Image (cartoon, rainbow, N blue to C red; front, side, top):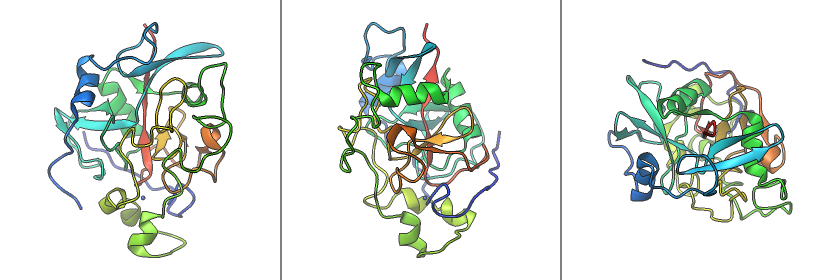
Length: 258
């Protein structure tokens, strides 16, 4: 199956503002553990697969991946910096533990990747609960209520400005240029910011990449901006179609507890 993305907004700050190669990124042993069930759980008493947190909230509970999503095509890692529109075949999501998460992904593509792993995209309520932490915490930011500019991967220089200069309207091709998520000081590997963790153990829920949820919005902010559309766990962008993607868009999977 091939995916075709439709651009709904090309202005930096709306979603914002994001070297092609054949070889995908190496998968660390710990992340392979997430695939075979050996990754330790955050909440040992919870009915969730390895690598997921058991998250409780008003009205229910969910299993939420501890890391943003990376992509496998078959058994081969897909390069995090390469838009996946041209993929022809089945994809599945794995937690990006110690590796770069997948950018350049639409909500439609992210939902398919989660489904390929027997999971689904999180609802907004599930994602927000995992970000804010256990009910006795319920923080503004994953790490607490007091803002810490160094805790998460945010406030970086825009890669699209670095590559193409300041411009009030960038093209679709520029917003999806594979170099955007490869520049130094931009996108980080999952877990590179150890303080950016909720009390459930979910990392990078503020900054790094925007994360699609099932209603077609994306949440959390990304490595350039995690403030414009809300503080911390309340950051949410609703300006785009589910087929939209750019260098800033990523995802995280959820599942129903067993």
